[in-house]
Every structure is written in structure tokens, then in C-alpha cells.
Image 1: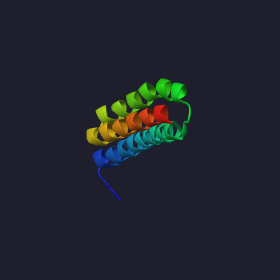
Image 2: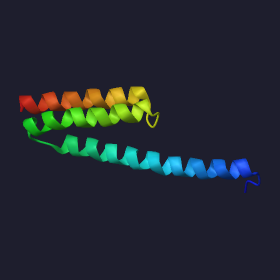
Image 3: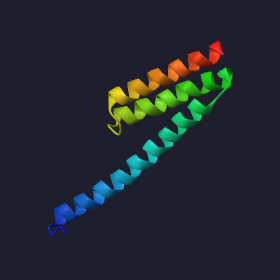
Image 4: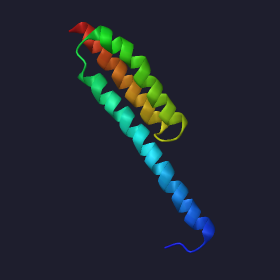
Length: 86
């Protein structure tokens, strides 16, 4: 266990930040999962900008890597286009 005041505080800060990041990452993953489950194109078109915005925000705050956010957004756009062809 740490025995410097600064390292004890640092551990507290890291734990708080980790919980905060986990919450937003989990919320975004659920939004992505819900988007993939959609079968209605109109509903998916409304939801895509919201999910893309969530991913961009996570990437901006370095919760996920910017390339991962770009990959996910690309795959979601492809799945939206597939809904139109069905």
C-alpha cells in the first residue's frame, strides 16, 4: 500500500476516473449493441448520429482509441446501408 500522501490521493483520483470512464464506455457499448439490433431503417438513421457522437466523445477523452471509434462508426454506417437493401 502507498504511504505517501500524494500517492494515496493519486490512487483515489485514478479509481474515480476509472469508474467514470467505465460508465461512459459501457453506456456507449450498449448504444452500439442496440443500434446493431435495429431492423427499421428510419429508426436507425435517427440513432446513428447519436451513437457516432458518443463514440467521438469517448475518443476525444481518450477513453477509447480514435481508430477504434472510426472503425465502429464505419461498421455502423455499413450496417445502416444494409438495412436499406433488405
